[in-house]
Image 1: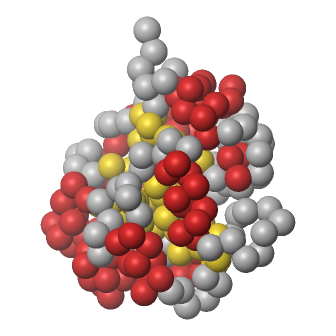
Image 2: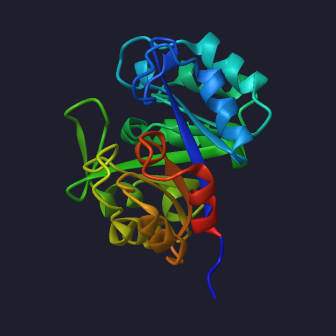
Length: 235
């Protein structure tokens, strides 16, 4: 018997617009997000791409989106320092994703866990077996060693979002084995992100006991399937 997989449609924001909507340079993030809600989304993954890639960002816009959307929001995008943490804590986001780059500072991760509690999600971005800081050339070391350095991870005290940095946005297929390997290191099911190409990937993740959520971006926005079809596949 299979169990359901929670689906988090992603809304990536860059230069004030929804970045991943093909052929619509003027798409407002709020319109894209509300469209997903109308189609059945119950939890959204909202990303400030500009902040994630060191291009500034728009905290006022992001906080406003969190405020106005009628469903819970998981807030992400370069949240990696004390100021980022304070800002994210002040929003109404039900979850805050601490960027993978923050794993270079164990004290900051512990502080985030203390302040955010169950709201905290820690991103582990993986490329070729190493944890990486997305948008940079920094490699933090093998996943097992990085997890071992952080009590909040090795003790399973926080939710972990595993992002496949080599496949993210490329629709080349979900690496279920990668997600499972990290889940076993942290001792709990993880949120998977990256590589989903079609409904078969969603079904494979649904059937994997090490994954209980999936962030969905490119495949959904580029029309590989509808949100309704994705939700059905995740049941």
